Amino acid sequence: MTHHLPAGTAHAGPYLVDVTPETAGWGHSALRVLQLPPSGVHTFDSGDSEWIVLPLAGGCTVATADDFGHDTFELTGRTGVFDGVTDFAYVPRDARTTVTSAGGGRFALTGARCTRRLPARHGPASSVPVELRGTGNCSRQVNNFGAAGVLECDKLIAVEVITPGGNWSSFPPHKHDEHRPGEESVLEEIYYFEFAGHEGTPGLGYQRVSPSGHGKGTDVLAEVRDGDVVLIPDGWHGPSMAVPGHHMYYLNVMAGPDAERAWLIRDHPDHAWVRDTWPAQPVDPRLPLYTAPERSA
Image 1 (tube, rainbow, N blue to C red):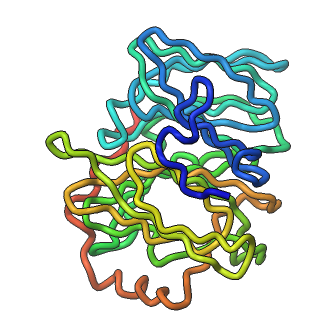
Image 2: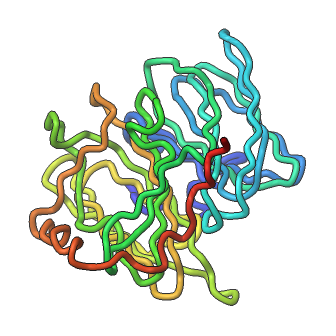
C-alpha cells in the first residue's frame, strides 16, 4: 500500500483528490478535493457517509436534500487557506448535495462512514475555535472546525493545522491505533497539504510516520508539496516539518470504529518530554496567522 500520494496521483473524475475507504484500504475516512471553474456545479451522493464541505479557496452554495427535507447554505469561503478561517456546511448520509460556485474555487469534502443520520447545518466561521498548540519551534495553529466536542458528527473528526515556516508540528510524534478506553482511540487519518509560496517559488515540507508495533507497520518519510496526501492507518506520526520561509497547511480527516467519537492520543515515549518544555517558551510571535471573525451580536 502506498501511503504518500503525490499531487495528481489520487485524481479521479472531477476530483483533484479522491481518497475513499476502498482506495485507502481501510474502513471509514474519506477525502475529496473538488476544483470548480466560475459558475461550476457539482452534485454528489453522500451514500453511507457524512460529509463536511470546506472551502479551501473561494465561496460556494451548498444545497442538500434527502427524505427529510432540503437545505441550502451560502458559504462565504476565503481567498486561500492562509487567509482566514472559513465557514462550512455539514451534510448527512443518504443525501444528494450540489455545490455551485459563481466565482470558482477549490473545496474539500471531508467524509466518514457512519450510522446515524444527523441534520444538515451551516458552520459559521465565527464558531470555529482557533487553538495555538505548542510553543517555540513547535508552535502551530489549529482551526478546530470539525473537532470532537466542537461539531456534532457521528464519526467524522476534521481540523486544519497551520505550521509557520521552519517549525515542526505533529510533535511529539503520537499515535491512535489502539483501543484503550479513556486513553487512546483507533482513528484512520488523512493529511492533505498546501504550502505558501515565496516570489513564485513553491513551498515544501516533510512528513514522518514510523511503525508503532500495531496495525500494518506503516513507515513513511516523504517530501510533501501542494496537493500531496499522506494516509496514516496506524503508527507514530510526526513530525510534520515546514521548511523555512514557507508556511505549511494540512487538513486532517479522521474516523474509526470506536463507539466514542474522541481524539485520544499517546505520545511517543522517546519524545514525550518535549511537551514538558513548552511552558518555559513563548509561542511563535507569527501566530495566530489569523483568527476567527467575531460573532455578530
